[in-house]
Length: 244
Image (tube, rainbow, N blue to C red; front, top):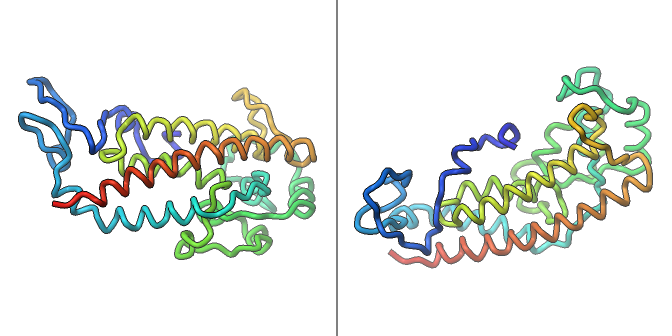
């Protein structure tokens, strides 16, 4: 997770209480950045810092609300990882061999179809795979297509939580981290790589049984993510409501 997202373990471990809390100051070393926090008799988020974030918060809330409002689509079967290696001799994760042949990868994609809705996955599709996706995704239309069944959209709640951790608090951000970690495990189980050396048991998406198992787990993660997404919207909206 610390390679997948540019967020260090130290940053995750740095504690933030959340914007609704005021702490009694103790004469000990603290990690509260004075650009963000008032550190005096009490420690709390600076009202001017919250005010300076209002436009960015509004954009984030709009994005999360749009994602939350759509029905979850759980029929992609993790084939984004397959689309990233289709027809390629050199692989993105070249330290790991494929567990199935390129012919099997092409056959599965042809039979099942690509249904990716996440730009940050789509942008790594191979030239051969990209035209096979019904949605030709660009960054500018991400708010129009992001949906709560997508594994990577739900993983990204962790990235968003860490962006706004002074407001959301560390306990919430760590819930998002645990969700992202669990989703990434499913992501790798359903990938076409042979990760047996890491103890990763594959979910064989090339089979109907494998696709059923994937979709069932994807639905569980989607439900977890929707709960966190809506809680995140509520917390961020409360911060937007703060008047200087």
